[in-house]
Figure 1 (cartoon, rainbow, N blue to C red):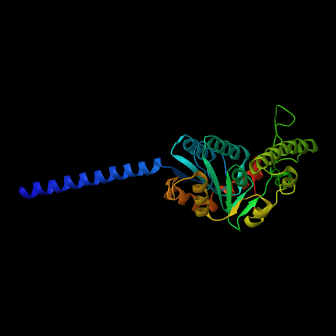
Figure 2: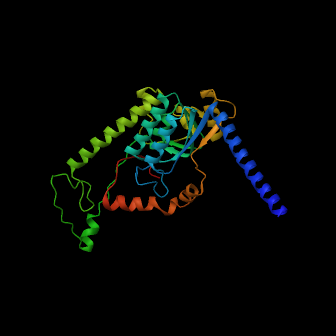
Figure 3: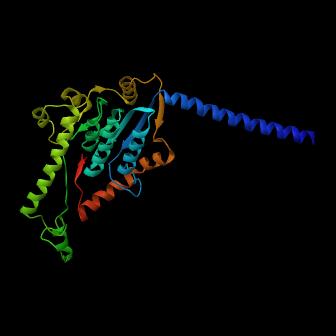
Length: 303
């Protein structure tokens, strides 16, 4: 009986110690956090807007936008490191993330873009909206431009004896159909849309980088740059890795030397699994769908 009572006291005491340590750790974290926190947000892979949840192998634009919105409302967070490893994505998804970045900056948050393997087209669009851009010497970046691709399977359909019957409400309702070629008029219409989306991209970079329009015209023709080339052209600010970007954010936001880090759980099991399956999932399916059913307008570097 005495042994049972002693065991109960030990168990209760252990639980109390664990709860106290947990509480004290939380209090210490909150004190540390209130001195100034730094958040890390990852944008990895082709960017798409999917309100039903993250796509296989692609960052969900809606999810990233919501994450940035929460950070904009977090008074403890003084700086954000946007870790970009992306060839870009759909125009709408990229622009929504960029707009939320602007809201963060309007509320006094410092944003430093850290460019990984690739930060091209829409990936660079997002970087241009930051306070400072840090890239590796070999990062692939730039590719300022817009792309829209349609597959023309008319010849294949004729060979296999397949014919699509189309009933439409307007002359151009089936524009981009794989069953026929684009007319000259349709090509001109689509080019106007591409030119307008390009002008939006161009202006975003010009304002974000405070760059002379004439100089930018010579760089914004879809070409890619290494990080070192981009530095020379004024498209990025400094060479460095993610840790260098963190240190730059600490200095710009005047944070403590070791600030509280708010993570987006990029290293969680689900995130690792998602990235590991990227090459077997969405991208090949997207290419097939684009060829057969049409495509979306994208700020994206096509490798």
